[in-house]
Amino acid sequence: MPTPTTSGTTSFTLSIDELIDEAFERCMISSVRSGYDLRTARRSLNILLAEWGNRGVHLWKVKSYTQNLTQGTATYNAPSDASDILEVVYRTGSGSTQQDTSMTKISRSEYINLPNKNSQGTPSQYYVDRQYVPTITLYQTPDTTGSQIFYYYVGIIEDAGAYTNDPDVYYNFIPCLASGMAYYISMKKRPELTQQLKMIYEDEMQRALVENGQRTSVHIVPSNFFPGG
Image (cartoon, rainbow, N blue to C red):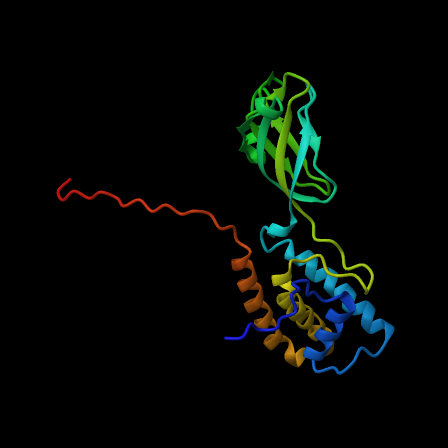
């Protein structure tokens, strides 16, 4: 059987202006007719990307960060592009002597009810305050300078920016990005197509979110059942 001739590349994406063209075509509009069409489409794209922040953790936006700790300081700012903080470990030493200890995330209610917030010791819990720039507050307050916390956080998806830019999305989200843009634009240009385009968008988004999940080993342990037990 002959070897198929393929491109040998895996870099396909759509620039912002190509996404706008695709969305207008799906709305049965043959071309972008004015500068306002471009502006309103880019605005819709930015709103769509902001809405994706409500769709769970997008793995391509998960980043790591190391925060140096100071004795007596409990609260630290997260990076400016952070939306939420995921797993956190308390870290001491470095290289072959590095030791990471898992920490427990607690809620605002749990943190406010801690009676001795300023007591110093080894941090074992953390509370995330999701402001414009989230902060992370440790309990106990660090009793030494030189230790660290290492954590993963969810970054905010970048704005569309210039029309020649590529969107800040992973390749398997390109289909639902195009269908989402068509859905958003239809609400302003072709409302009779809105429901149909919404169904396509939600279907493609669901498939992308399932594919975006983490793959880990699953261990199934049978339970023992003893009649009459």
